[in-house]
Amino acid sequence: MDDNLIKRLLSEERRSWEDPEKFLPELIMRDDVVADVGCGPGYYARVLVRLSKMVYCIDKNEKMLNYAAGINSPNILFLKDISELPNNSVSVVLFANSFHDMDRKNMYKETIRVLNSKGRVIIVDWKKESPMGPPSDIRMSKDEYIKTFSLDFRLDREFEVGPYHIGLVFVRK
Image (cartoon, rainbow, N blue to C red; front, side):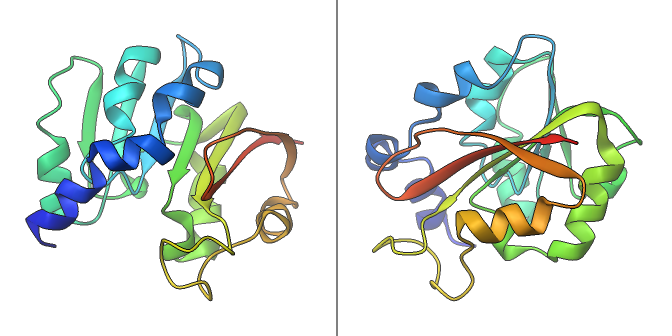
């Protein structure tokens, strides 16, 4: 992972079309414990620490996680894997531009395991037709997310992220 990618992920340009300050305040409650899975350099975590009770910043990429560890807040912990979280320990699992890149079956199981009984899953991801982002063949549409999460969750709401992303909130059935 090079430093240029970290700079792009934390850039003001990105904020112009994907600004978590604009939508996270209506999604995150003060008593939420959030698992930011695939946190990268902490783009979302920087906002989450101000809105929630606790943030678990999770990323397998050590360089990204080390960069995120620069967030100076008493309510954030850094983990390499979601498997390090106890059962029923979080109220929100956030996948921001990350779920499409993971072992979906395993990550779904881990999401079920770590979420409490009233837990929510928040998805921010690239629209299939977006001119930017990862290859379109690995991106997931809204319908694909609904199908993926339909066994244990229902789509509660959609929210506006920006021109290139979808925003979805799933709640347990």
